Image 1 (cartoon, rainbow, N blue to C red):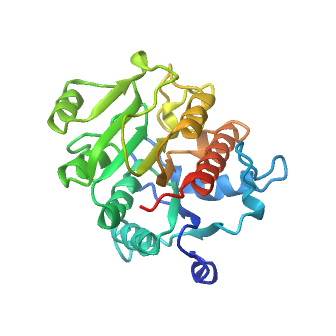
Image 2: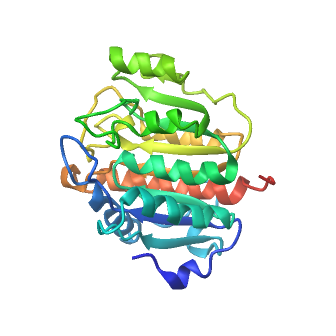
Length: 281
């Protein structure tokens, strides 16, 4: 449950971690709802520390707070709970890092951000475009969030990186919504997006090669390395105002390897937010 005590302490400019234990829109395999608690467990297991590579120590940083998990009990639709919770934080000027959960959670998160910032610049790291119009009869499937985002004009610019699963329907969707897709076969490690203004970063852990991230539901060989994403985060030259890390499935993980990757990415994103988000947005 979200800590009301901690919520009362949030201030503009803070970075807030919030868990979204939701996988009801997953296809093929459930388990991503277990991810937020697994990530926290690994983050605090004593094997590492909370320092980002840029020197920001999250354990000593007053601007970093973990608000714990949203309550998604089915009494209110999950999309409404997610959107309203994130909206309340974004309206305060808080930067959020959401821990999924499956990728369907990104749609209501971005909807909340767009209310405050207008259409967003989104960089999505993913093996899959998640642009299906409908998947298995579900328009809110984790295979569909970016179709919903684009059809509602919540994104000014959507850049998808690491894609290696395009089919004819998805190519049509890419063209329909003018999505910039960087297929992994065309990836260059020095790439930085040509965008201005704040960025929302969405990381589906299956963008990584299964050798680095076995704990995902949909293995897709031939992926990025963990360092590829870390370098991107560190070299990004525009503010990151929000992020999510999704699709960790602890049921498939090996020795918490993928959870450790999620922790690493969380630390680096938070470090960049705290160190570099000094522009008036």
